[in-house]
Image (cartoon, rainbow, N blue to C red; front, side):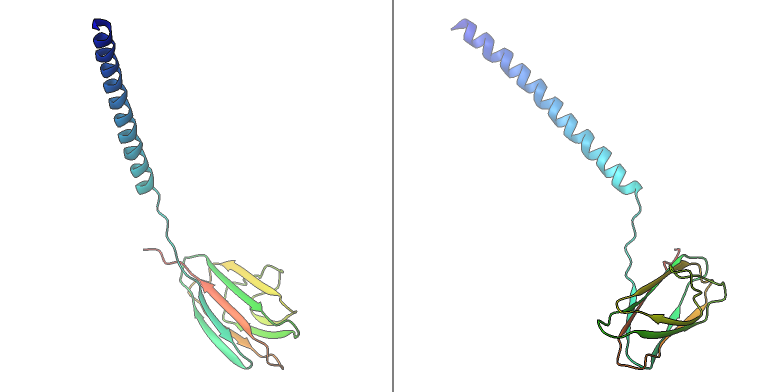
Length: 145
């Protein structure tokens, strides 16, 4: 009987120390996790997106000093799209190495993407397709706070 009581006391001390160890480990984890999360700054933004029907245009405002993403997509499954862009003053190139300004014939399901600092330019994208082709135009210009 005496040995059983000694064993229980010893077990209680071990469990108490183990419990404190677990509590301190959990506390340290939360302190580390919260400081890690607060040290990262993640900003979520949405693309400004517009649908251009035949003979419509969009005026896109850009920010000076920020890298903008301009995306133009012909979503047609049957027709080519004719897109005319103006307003770039920095000779920005699309992913297919064509200049931003100018006339672009987009094949079926083709997209053009430009990533650059447009230096606050006002860009104009026009859908001058001879057929009823829908063109999707998106732009993202993050603002520095």
